[in-house]
Image 1 (tube, rainbow, N blue to C red):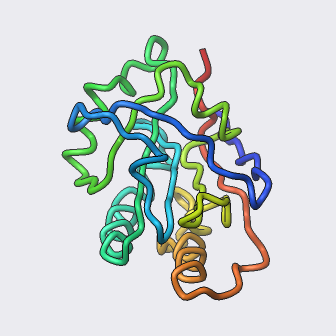
Image 2: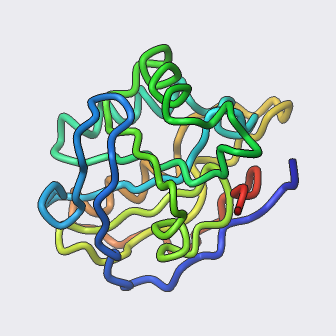
Length: 184
């Protein structure tokens, strides 16, 4: 594991479109046709990263809360499953069901989507408006494994509230940090 920070894609960037398979339902998810007119959270994640495992429970709770407000959440794993078989689509489905993901858990086998988003780590969060303009990129909150800081989702929550309430986005956006994406 190598601690890596997110690349902080330029705000205002239009979300690159993609179609990827959902490992839970087997159906395809297409951003252009399946996005929300309210807000869209695209997160790069995986099964084994301790930084992801640390926030998973609160991530599910936050997603459930904001899905009721019309926000679409999508999780994407882009890791090389040859070297990291615990991130295989079958294992992704198992984890999503075990943890209770209420959102698609997509598999980016060719790693093209991760490259298009300049994703660097897991977890890595991107929040797009209903027009698919990047409004936030960065961390879930300041908590890290073994930090004794409670997992709250405060940074992601503030960004979503700003979009939903049509308010100013938080001025300071901190990069996410976690395991590097396992490139082929």
